[in-house]
Length: 507
Image (cartoon, rainbow, N blue to C red; front, side):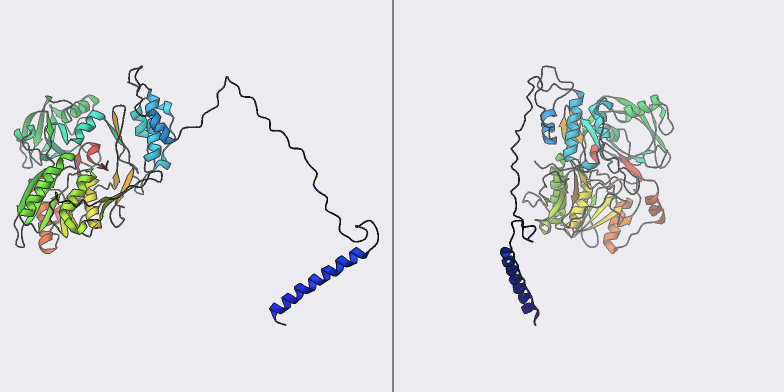
């Protein structure tokens, strides 16, 4: 019998047997179904009376406890509730209120908010000390702190830095990264500054400050005096510096601090080569005031018909991503239009941002290059690295000449509260291809040590000369000594933490 037919037959047989059994049971005598083999009737469940719900009386002396505030509500409640505000002011608050604001703000926006430590508010005397400790304690695979970019400024100081200004002598210093070595050299001198007028120049090594041995001083009083002289707080402060030249000569200079606006774009030059003109410029900082001089510099290079560009970013620590995206567009031109320059990825609590696109604009001149040569090193950070990464995402061939960049694929939106501006990592940037994994920096195409013997922009300066040779025949013509210098303890810029960040400054 086929399987389907057999199953149906079995089902019918079972039904017939069931009917016969019920008929037999119905025909049996006796009143007790159990004794006759019958089925007991189903008894309904007992009816249980509904129990009344007893509500405890409300004690008018003890009002109900409100639910805990959300992080967003805490941010709104404690923002600008300041310990130093007048007691009768709407901003009157406590130091703990300032800490609560920071705890809520970090808990909501910090990129690694799940790794924040649970800190006791009472253990920290100030909001700043609490903030400094309120970051991930984890380390990278190499043992470095995972978060190296957590800092704050007074609101006034941040406003000054945002304008690209400083109080000082017009010097950019480099310091040695070798353990236990205090070695500072001059990297650049601002034209027209007190340092320039005193005859100081690139490559000079600092020996003494007001007679204090710079390399050897160890007592607290001497260290405090050195810091006060090298980072003057007010204009008018005057100090004596002694430096040694590469040729062994010593030079003494008395410098008086002034308020300076450092020019972010310098040394724009057209260099002639056998295969056409090559543009060069030094770009020092992604500040708001850089847009106009950058636009003028690229317009002049476009009008000169340059075939390639050497962009000197070796001391550029970063700044505004809006400026970085414009630099990248002025290099690449319409070939990058509509592509992502950088997409800043936030934590899973934050609404995703729209990508920052290459800002195609009729107001921006462009060179339309398929390749670019970037002079770089450990002072090339953050928004400067975004230029490299953004261009590579748009298929522009970026050749790095010099040293490994510093490795900061992160961005911030600063938060100001009670007269202080706080910076905490909130975003990791990726390019049009989704790449943003460069926490260890970008490796150079051609490694060479920074050359302090020659001015920036000089054809004799090692990094520029190397870039031009790389462009000419594709070789990396660096001497063994220069390659060894690139592997030795490096010289890195001495500068403010805010000079080494990328800021997403979109409204």
